[in-house]
Amino acid sequence: MDFQLSSEQRLIQDSIRRMVERDIQPVLDAHDPDRPLPKEVVRKLLELCATQGLTSARVPQSAGGAGLPVLTYGLMFEQLPPVVAFAIVGQEATATRIALESSPEQCERLLPDIIAARKIACTGSTEPHAGSDHRAIKTQARLDSDHVVVTGRKMWITNASICDLINITATLGETSDGTNRMVRVVVDREESPFETSKTPCLGFCQGHLGEVVFDACRVPKRNLLGGIGDAARVLTLTWLANRPLFGLMATNMAQRALDAALKYAGDRTQFGRPIASYQLVQELLADISAAVTTSRLICYYALSAIDNGDRANGASAMAKRHAIAACQRAISMAMEVHGSMGISCEVGLERLYRDCRMLPIPDGTNQILTLIEGRELTGFAAYRP
Ligand SMILES: Cc1cc2nc3c(=O)[nH]c(=O)nc-3n(C[C@H](O)[C@H](O)[C@H](O)COP(=O)(O)OP(=O)(O)OC[C@H]3O[C@@H](n4cnc5c(N)ncnc54)[C@H](O)[C@@H]3O)c2cc1C
Image (cartoon, rainbow, N blue to C red):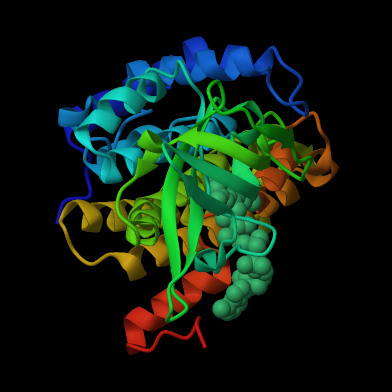
């Protein structure tokens, strides 16, 4: 067992850190932290990430992607500012899903624009009445000669309000035994226009979580992906690595909170001494540090298990659930170290707190992840009647 990163892994991390410091953070700082970034700015940031393989990390090289081990992807991803990581999840996972279930012709036609970030992409599964139970989706895909006619509504979709293309899960209806015949359709906004709107919410305020409405939207049949029944499998496959990635997003936030708390505790004097010299403040710092380390390691562990081809459903669910909960607590403790300054907008911890609170929901809520772990431990699936 080796807990050290290889020199190659360190170099990769350093190169992303340098890109963030030089090219990404200044752009984020130049914009209002509580307003969505303009579409062109997001596109340019994604374009920068594309140069490092981040928009196509899991897409095989044969399909034009970076084809990275998911642990390497995680090491890179962890360095990204949260709002950029959030946009990357939408972009990269969409490219990966398309690569997983498309024909070579579809890959060749659809992937280059997403990988190069000429088009902003997203994946739409969630609907008003289908969240955790994604097999309950109702968005209709009706075949009509050489088109698929899509009608329905997708909600809480990352990148939705500025997307050029969405990969949706829709239904062709039910079979005689009541099985939902789910399919994937790539809807390109230019050739098949649809409406989108931004959903104002607690965190990732520079990001673009939103809603998409399809009103008898006509999509060329050549954009129908995979076979019937593949859609649920492909969603699950990408969620497997996405979950520890969300955990690493939280780890990035908790690391920032730790850095801020350490600095503040050293600078701030009360009762004639730096507050860092008081044992109870040291306890807070030690607990934050433990949260950062355990979160990072559990996510690396899950990603490494996926790379090794192990069954990683439980490890991946555990990594997301543990890391996000631990990092939420860590950010809150860092706020405590700062006293009143912790809740001020000036220090930025309140933003991390709000952003981190967004993370337990996508790609498996805490309850669903708990039940996935429970199924791994007991052999009983408790989340379906
Ligand atoms: C930041 C963010 C980004 C997102 N990005 C995307 C995206 O890009 N694409 C996309 O399709 N969706 C996206 N989503 C939506 C997200 O995947 C869903 O919100 C999530 O699956 C939960 O669905 P829901 O909100 O309908 O909650 P529900 O499924 O209605 O759950 C409500 C509550 O009931 C609990 N619950 C549900 N079923 C069970 C059960 N069987 N046992 C125990 N408890 C249960 C849940 O844990 C939760 O606490 C995003 C959401 C967020 C917040």
